[in-house]
Image (cartoon, rainbow, N blue to C red; front, top):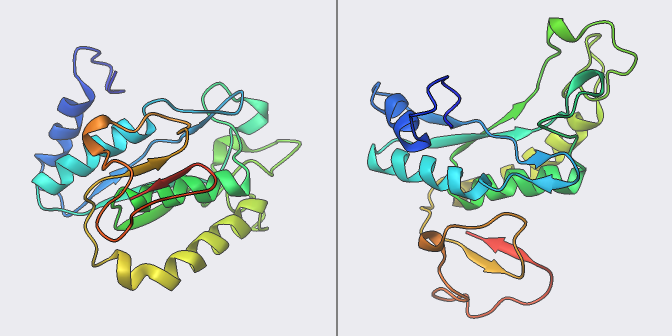
Length: 193
């Protein structure tokens, strides 16, 4: 389902419709952290589709991080990620070749007013105070700033999955257990791109 109201349209057809409008870049907007501590099963699949379509159109793609939960305790589709999960989401976007990062949600949406708790509403509350996600975003952006000179010159060629992935990495994106100078990976589960 593409989210367009037309369930006959595949996700790839939906993305083609955007790419065909002569974009300067495409922004990937999917939030991986779902209720019950789960990860969206299509996280890597949808990222792979965006990357392939952007590459074919010779345009960069960017991705949004999930820097919020839902308001008033509504968590049907998303939950509040921990700092480790937030950084995992940001780094998997980069491992898949994203050339830009946006953070959802920066500002407080007007329809979320009159809450008892503003800590899930984004990076800032409606009064301009920093939420916990401000610190996550700052840490992630500082990490990115330290290596952006390498990432902006790099090209995604595939993924190495070490251990169990919380979401399936498409087979066509997998490089196996080594690639060029990287001959082995040990330790905790990792996704390397």
